Image 1 (tube, helix red, strand yellow):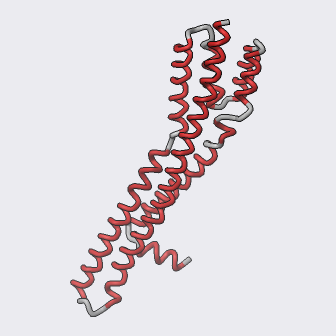
Image 2 (tube, one colour; image 1 turned 90 degrees about the vertical axis):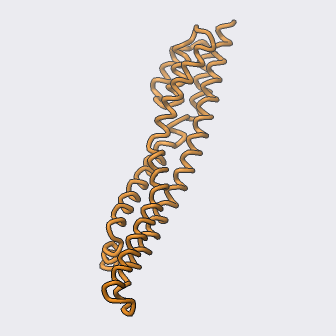
Image 3 (cartoon, one colour; image 1 turned 45 degrees about the vertical axis):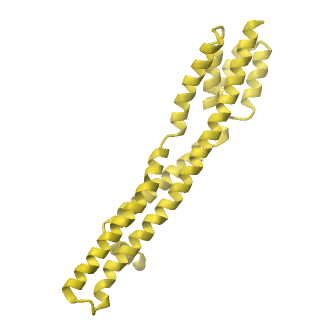
Length: 206
């Protein structure tokens, strides 16, 4: 514990900022891991079940199922059913508009996570600059013959550089993973919702 406190002190004012950034990044990652589960976004059995009910003419029962499900896919499909009777293009536009709102919810906090990934190395570099400045200040005061006088400045430079990278690398990996996850989920949502749109449009033509 004392060693950790010593490192914390040597890190200067930049290290607490990086620690705070790491905590925020972990919180965002945990939140997105929980939110972006497929079962919470697009349950696999929902679309086939609703499609069967619509084919059987049980539209009200399908609406009830969607209300009870309360997921992004359910909300998009519900808009499609509520727009039944209108031209296909109108139904599709309504579904796409709802989809845009859902995507914004799925993307929540990811830009901030990406910002942490980009800023953390720069904060580490800032700490490095201050550490070197402190080292040169020590040289100016006691000369270059006393290595102990340089130790704190060099330690500050190395600790903040390493800390910045330690925060940035996982943050960037999480950011890329979650962006890919959101893209895959959005494609799945659009695919299933458009199936229902086509199904409703085909039913209206009969």
